[in-house]
Amino acid sequence: MTLPQISSGLNPINSYEQIIDALAEEYAEEMGCDIPGSSLLPKQAKKDKLKFEFKEKVKMKELNQRIFKALDILRNEGKEYLPEDLDAKLQRDLKQAAVTMKQFDYKTDRITNFARLLGIGEDSLEAIDSVAKVKYTDEKIDDALSLLVFLTTLAEDNAEYWYELGICFQDLNQFDMALKAYTNCLEVNPNHMGSQAFCTECYLNLDQKNKAWDSFYKAKSLMVEQNLEQEWAECLESHKNLLGFDNGA
Image (tube, rainbow, N blue to C red; front, side, top):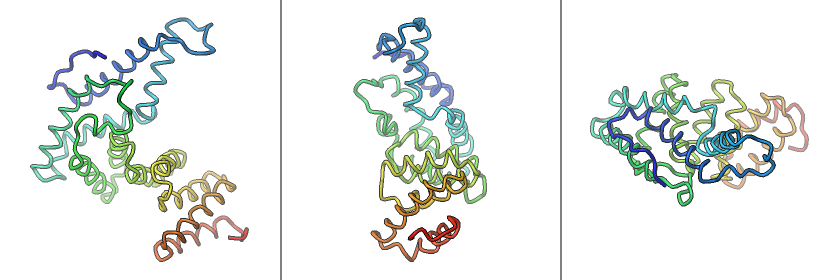
């Protein structure tokens, strides 16, 4: 699969956007626009549909701009939060990623860990996460959220990044998005206590009481299985009180 030549000197933000568009374009071309049930659609409409579906696999559509914002934060502010050598390594990784991406083949490479595919090391991922945590502590929640969106795009198979993303969304009262993040966390790690517990809070805030009860029981079961009563009993008791009646809990 051949993609347009990408200069290593390009702005990483623009490179990423161009890469995704190029991959989506080629995906639609190679699939041949053969979509079941779409015989009445014009060829361009079919192609656009395939491109849209590809982009949905790569990232949550609503969060595109946050990825670009995260790259901008890392490029312009990374040295304020990271040791010089670690920031330099991160900048090299991000620039190299834009070059490596041109070799990506959606047919053979699974989009579950872009970082591994692009050669972005664990130390760089941890560096991004550390910047996100400082931003969160400094109550710059929107910046932290953007960085965590970027991390979950790079390492979709890391449960903790999804969990941290959910917390940011929840702090911003974006409960639907928080649930998406917590659900993704639980898909990677079904035994993640924090995500299960905070799903209950999100469902309560969305007035989805039946789902809140279901999540509460799952969280309670995880708490007992993992001997986490000391850390989580008070939280679950508050959830039970918010649910409003005993219901055998």
